[in-house]
Amino acid sequence: MIGKPIEKAINEQINAELYSFYLYLAMSAHFEESGFPGLARWMRAQAQEEMSHALKFFSFVHERAGVVKLVAIDQPKGQWPTALAAFKAAQAHERHITQRINTLMDKAIEAKDHATANFLQWFVKEQVEEEATVDPIVTRLEAIGDHTGALYYLDHELGKRGA
Ligand SMILES: [Fe+2]
Ligand SMILES: [Fe+2]
Image 1 (tube, rainbow, N blue to C red):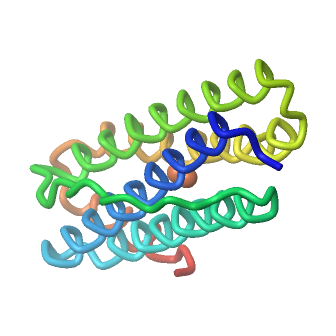
Image 2: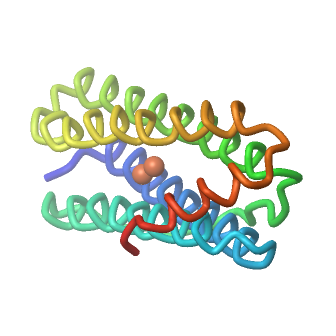
């Protein structure tokens, strides 16, 4: 059975993953509405991944005979001045989530909760991938600057991501 402090921390992480889902869904809507269907599709796929993260934590709480407590999800921003601004916000958000996962891991180790520590290993690896996915897009958008043609090319390319 899961200890109460870890259960509470995982419930907070469920909320953080649902907020991630909401944030990327908001970015998807923003790109769809501003004429970038490829970026919209990429963000929508990203949102779906975040929902799957939330559900992984959700299932884990129940596997350990814990109690899931769902609370309100914060409202994400709805507008970003540029594609670069949105992807920079996504990058900052992923770095923040990495910190949260690391703190969660610290708590599991302190509590000698090996099952949770083992479960969290997947997320440690996933966060490396999340940051490695978004970092080069930020770099490319910085290189693109005001070149509209290059931006539409990137939109086309990122739109190939399955959703
Ligand atoms: Fe996530
Ligand atoms: Fe993520």
